Length: 154
Image 1 (cartoon, one colour):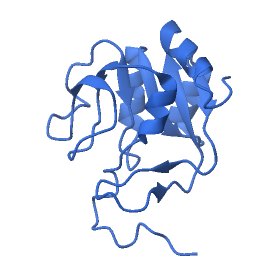
Image 2 (cartoon, one colour; image 1 turned 180 degrees about the vertical axis):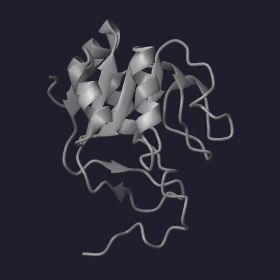
Image 3 (cartoon, rainbow, N blue to C red; image 1 turned 45 degrees about the horizontal axis):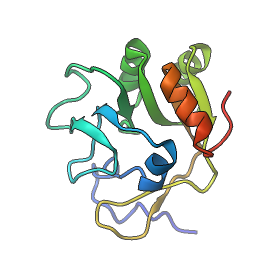
Image 4 (cartoon, rainbow, N blue to C red; image 1 turned 90 degrees about the vertical axis):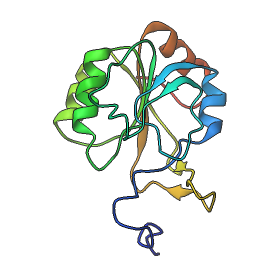
């Protein structure tokens, strides 16, 4: 089995789209996508921060969507934990940031094992080699996660 990510130029592997079907299932519009890909997004949001906007240090407001760069999720998770209003797509992993999320009051919904990102070039979806989950803060977000049919919440 080959790694389908090897042919991508170094430094571009963080630019992937969360599939539209996930947002269709959630039936939600966010105020802000804090880590949107440069080429656009499937995220239903009123405003988008890309790496050019530096979403990590820009003001976060309202209900946020966060699918941060997986190459360095820790500062993004810290910010998400401070904001406490939104939904994030992150790996299920071990580590200090994951322990903090697990210990918080956020809802955790593991996604299916074969969850894949859409690629900006429209080619074959990029499989994720590790399990991912949605992490949600806020009553409305947690209700929508439960109603989505995407999985079971802890």
